[in-house]
Image 1: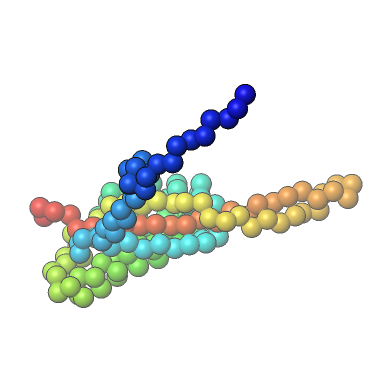
Image 2: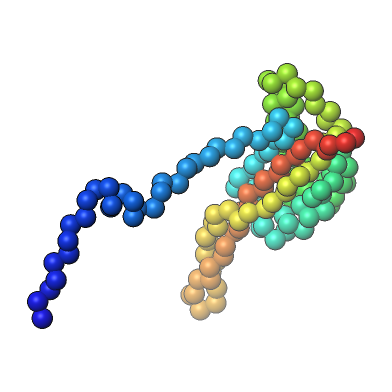
Length: 149
């Protein structure tokens, strides 16, 4: 069977068929919102999530008090990140000459993501080696000013 030759289309028709280019919109956070990220924390995400679930949605002062008296190792790392987010909010307000009440801040978003795994091997019986994965976490906290207070 002879192959059919496709008719050439004009550049205008080809451009009309192409999907429109996606616009990249950069959204900047409002002045009353700030975030902090700590990457590569040497603790498994599962253990970190147990602590971060307790502070999500709470006022910053209440969350810091809870983290201060927690027995979990993850609380110290999360506390550092939360303090950094509060400092970032203060700095953003200072640079824009906006009024910021630190006591009105609350934890708007708190997420623990999985970081890269450190892969190690441990000797086992009969000359074998068993793999060990040392997990790491990324802590992301967003604080915002509560409205209507």
